[in-house]
Each structure stands twice: as C-alpha cells, then as structure tokens.
Amino acid sequence: MNWDHSVDVVIVGSGNGALTTALCNYEMGTTDALLIEKSDQYGGTSAIGGGGVWIPCNHYAMEAGADDNLDDAMTYLKHTVPDTVPEDMLQTLLDNGPKMLKFLADRTDARYVSLGEYPDYYTDEAGARLGHRSVEPEPLDITELSEGGARLRSGHQMMLMLGMVPITQTEAHIFTAQQKGWVGLAMKLVFGHLLDLGRRIKRLRSRRSTCGMAGVARLALSVEKRNIPIWLDTEMTGLVVEDAKVTGIKVRKDGKDITVQGRKGVVLASGGFERNQAMREQY
Image 1 (cartoon, rainbow, N blue to C red):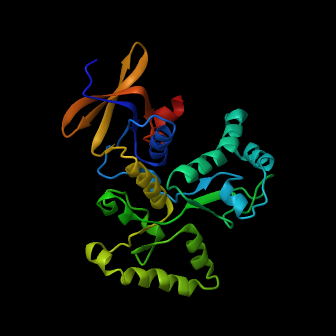
Image 2: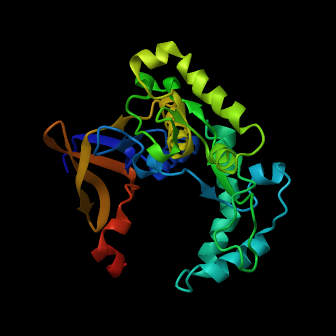
Image 3: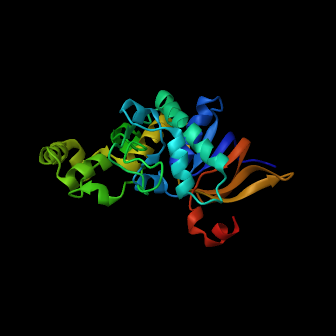
C-alpha cells in the first residue's frame, strides 16, 4: 500500500470519545496520533449535549461527601439495563469509570463538578441515588483555545441565558427553583459578559463555555497542548483492509482522495450509530 500519510493511531471523530482516545494514547506513550473530522468544526454531538457523565463513586463525588457504593450502583444497573448487556460489561464500567475520571483530572485539563441534586433517572429502583452519580464539566474560557475557539462547535441554545451567556446544569437548577441568590447570580453572569467589551465587539455570545461544549473545550485544549493535529473538513470514505486487518482509512480532504495509515490502530469514534436503523438492527 502506498500511503499518502502515516501515523501510529488515526482516530475518526472529534467528540468526547475521540479526544479522550487521543489523549490516553499520548499519555501512555503513543504520541503520534491524528484526529479527523468531516465538518468544519470539532466537538460533534458531545459539544451540543449536556455534557453530563454518569460515573458512580467518582473522586469528585467522594470529595463532596457522597453516600454511595459500587454494590448499590450495580443493583441499580441490573434493574434498569436490559439483560442483553453482559454483567461483566456493567462491572467494567463501574470499576474503571472512576479511574478514567481521575486519570483525566491528573493528566489533562478535563475537570468536572459533582451534581449533588441530579438524581438517577429511575429513582424508585433499588440502588438508586438522588445525586452525586453524575458530573458536569467545569466552565472554560474558550479564548484559551487556538483561533479563540472559533472552530469549537457551540453548545445548545437552551442553555443560553438571554441568548448570550451559557449556564451550567447547576446554575439552571438554581434559576429554575429560584433558590436563594439566583437574582444576584444571574446579574453577575449577564453583566460580566456585557462589560467584556473586547469579546462583545467580536461576538454576541459570551466567551464562557458550559455543559458539553465545556467538556469538549477542555479536552481540545489538552489536545492542543500536546500538538495532536485535528484535520477538519476531512471525511472518512472507507477502511483500508490488508490481510483481513484494518491498516488505515480512506479520506477525502481538500477535494482529494487520500489514504492514511494507522500503524498501531484505527479508532472509529464518530458516533451516529443510533441514527442508522439497519446497523442498529444488525448489531
């Protein structure tokens, strides 16, 4: 195979899964990685979503004084997850989820906050908890990113106050319940943006990122610090298979069809699986 480009690991996608894959490879010694993204912005659905991650007994929750244990979490999962999911996969999630969050906290800019008042969805089931199993990303100033974060996909507008200022899930709860101090908090966020004249001249929306956008921003900042490239406007068109092994991918970049070798591996982290009904039924 005559490759147009070659790296140790090529990763398709630019959301939470793809960015975390690149960072983990780098931190464990495989530094020659490449991310590709078919759109002109990175972040995908991860950036648009709420950004919450369900990881019982994570270190953020424990530091916040959560009353929880993995046995109860497993009981909850057994009552809410279909029997088609093997129990060892559930155990793997519970055992390694907290390690994953700690790994990212220790080695990257990924930071989360424990949601003490965000309950499990099925609160009547055995083993459920009323909070501290979900975490949300800490806000981040997107101007810390290259190009001032211009290539970062924006979060959902439902989490924008007055169409300008992104808010966290915690703040949304405070505003919705009109808890003590909610007016002062709202004024602080709005006037903080209105007084940020340098930002407002360039863009109406605040430089603050929250929810899924903040989660992607923090991972992307970590990727930038390690000089891991992200090729935007680059669509994967197929896999390269040699001797029954995937050795790379075919992509369309800058109007040209090229091949990219993954010397150690190819990771598909592009999402969209749930939108393909045929694949859902087959797999």
